[in-house]
Image (cartoon, rainbow, N blue to C red; front, side):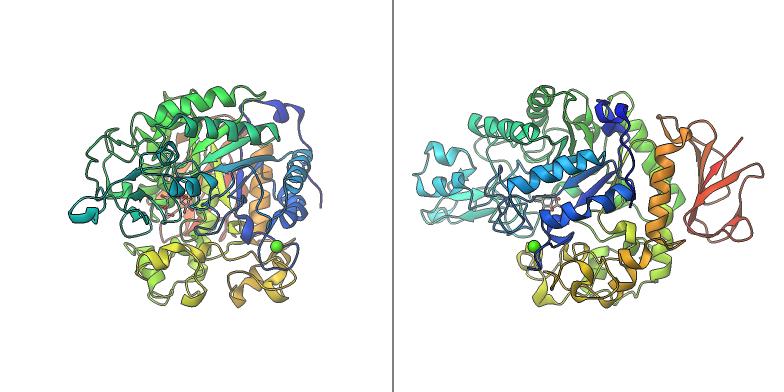
Length: 551
Ligand code: TEU
Ligand code: CA
């Protein structure tokens, strides 16, 4: 395997993240180095050459910190260490050094909305009296109604049920996620200091950037009495005044963090995660005085369709214009059904309902899903800005919808009273080889069961195979890095056949996406650089994308 040489400018360019291809690693599901069934840092270290050959610019690591795993590691009991099941700080340092040697940046996940209930601060809070400074780091309140037996407010958890849990002494604490994830009080100066020092801890170890979990929920209106909010952000029009989501004050936190990022050369980058429906406020997180980037999940939330994709792209580009922030694109993550399955769902199908049938209704056309996934990916990789890839999408992995109920790990399953299966189907450990227990993920089993079909989707099965999804990703990332027409931020729609999209980037580069159900001709004077699949007599088949050189 050969790695791409690091160009000296790329290594020091302070704006590297504006165009970077970032690959999300969910560490427990990536590669297992010691056969205990759990992916770990040793596994990742051994696969860094694979990621270099794939051609990614950066790796975002989902949490690898010590965690009781109430929410797959997003419940952190120590923000400045590595979970012993995953390795040590020395292993982490080796990853940073090795990745940098291969020209790959490292981004770590920061989870500032909540800690684990096993974090020393929360244990101290529980052991301390009502009204104590230890409790003030979290959101403790008396209940209402007789004996205070009703929660202090009608806030709801993202994972189902109320956002409040009662403690032994009768007070309640707020948790917007699982009850093992108590929300921090961001009006507390110690909380603010702790996270700035945590950012420095990892920046000092050489990390290049941060992904900020639930970035829009840190600032809450905690004035007495607590305001009503019985809805989740997903269904709300947000204008900066909601008691829980996307409050105007949250931006002062990121302005303070920017000062920390700028203590380093090059300044550390950051990307905000916010699930609120994208509107003009979403892009404020990406201002250069704050985080620089915010995930744009509109593509990930969009169903297949030329008008839909076009509207999403227009909104993102227009939304960033004037803010100075960097564009991002996402099709898959550890939180949603993989796009190779999602894009095969019939119009209007709720992916959660499909999951609830264990993937039986409707039965998906896997071929169609893969075609569309590849076409959507190739479109995304041609857009200006920074695409975020999720591990395994380069293999065309589908969602695993039929994990046995007993094997499910996502807290969503229990907290919703089995109404939602949750996110495990996107977190099944990767197949590296055709055969073997756990398909080369490790020497033994895997913490979530892998379906038999994973063998033929493994890296081994696709490596060097012309037309494989893996080779398509490799080729696209190589071209993206080297084609002058894909640098810069130029973008212009061009005329396209019905239900197709066509856009030009820099000099001589055009991308055409066929979202119709008939073959369409390509422009006469175009030369095909690559396509998401084979052309049909020089025409672009339905559910395909082509990259073209035009005179
Ligand atoms: O996700 C934030 C979030 O709002 C999710 O609950 C999202 O709505 C849901 O996953 C969709 O089903 C982040 C992390 O990405 C997620 O993995 C964590 O569980 C969550 O924060 C809590 O830290
Ligand atoms: Ca392991």
